[in-house]
Image (cartoon, rainbow, N blue to C red; front, side):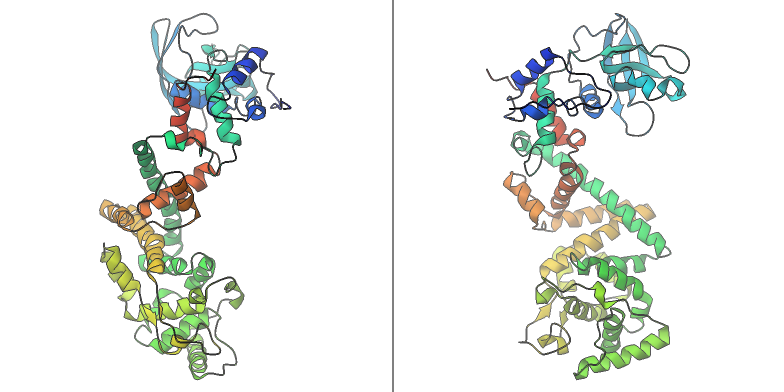
Length: 474
């Protein structure tokens, strides 16, 4: 096998001794990625060195600075991703003197000057400079030399071998071959964290929409519900409709099914301009009158997608179902926000499009009559993608923790979505037992696994910590 020695522009060749050590341990985790392991772009990435330092994954026996002073790391510090030194809140004892401050990590000591730290007062409080290779003496802006420790002979090659496997492996997730070794309790704790992380991130999107809609909670909820109704194919089209048809206009005709339907289909741009049937003809007449009265302009019909969809999911059917639901819901959908039982929510959301829509999927020839009720799966998506994020976001906006708790409780009571992500993790033994766990797995896959953020993942960190304890094969 050809061995790649691709390097970063400022990196020096790894030593032959270290190459031999990596080769001896590369198969410890079942890896066959020898070519990638010897590529220093992976094992010597600064982020990896930061992670190994924070976790204490180096030989700390008789640790000394480059000028011979003894070093005891009392507290490694916490990695932070903002500007300034890499780790905060560190405690180190140097020749018996305890120092509190920050730690800076570099692959080479000379990067200190290359990054301009010698001119930045933010680095005056660095109590330790931890480097892979000490190739230069450096100073802070106030002229002092930060104590420096060199780590290149103190790293276990097994940690680097695992990191390379995670970075270059072709599994469905980077740790597919190892995730089964992680304690399920540890995985569950991490997934609880990821659920909150996902909810917080989605809340920022909801809060932005809330501000865009002049801090109107009912209008915000209206937009979320319509977006969720169109998911996944027509999400953006339904979002356009929500902007084209504000809640206040719909509420005026809530008790008039014909005008309500005329508004929905007319603003969606889906009414035929030369209808041959009585019902669409009446809808068109009503819409033209209402559009003139309220100064409405329809959205482009081209925004809607019908291709490769089951007829029951056509946007025309969804709009007819929504008209049926809206006509019998409380003003501003307030009745949906007082229900904590998913079964009751499904029943409340399960409106049926009747009349013309009993034997139509769109405007045109009639079909065999079929009930067109909002199915349980669609109702669950409305809860998951509209009610839950709205409750969580309003809890944040109002400082009401009970609303946020209700959102999380709904997720625990709602069944998990069946999708490619939950199915993929189930094959690896990680099962989505409820919607909250399913959402956490989506966050894990899309925000960590696909971006190979294994160093920021609790599962990856645990595997990294345990890698050095796995006996080497002989």
